[in-house]
Length: 271
Ligand SMILES: [Zn+2]
Image (spheres, protein in one colour):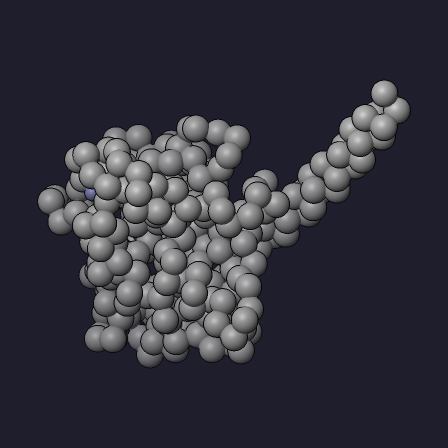
């Protein structure tokens, strides 16, 4: 086991092989022998190996696991169109229907553990903010700036929920939910930053910055006491289109590399 500085408690510890997307989620999505589509854009071909790295100590892994991963892991969309989390969301109060989106207030759905849900999502964003998760770069995958530290201490239960951070939760309908994983990335940079991550049917949108607009602020599951969750909608469409594009371009990369290999081999035999 590797020894080093744990990125979450900042202490010298033995480090666990941490996963970017929690291991329990991988296992749940792979039930029945299926393999979740790893929608990792440019690193599709690199395989799952790089999504594991000695990063956190055992205690911090436990904090993330008990904080939200255990609760969330068995509620995601599966290949047989089961989607327990969606079933819970639609038990909420249908507050609004606009432009293909429905907004449910889940305040009174006791089975939805808001803190666990938020802890789960921020745990993934946090992991992406302290490591590259790809072989060709040492830069963290996303840069949360000062908010990274505020999220770290909140995850550890050492501080209040970070200021100027707004998490919007979008859920696909079971028919449309892809069993797949998409690691956090910076989707938009305006006067504030917008990051997305997708985990089997649930799209998390994290907005950070003082000038975050009224929309994300109002739809933030943590800040709005009605606990809004969006079902389907425009954003999910946009996200799917982006994923398709990424997958296409990664296929191109793969065939390009295969061709290059052939060229190199031929050169070797010639010399
Ligand atoms: Zn630690």
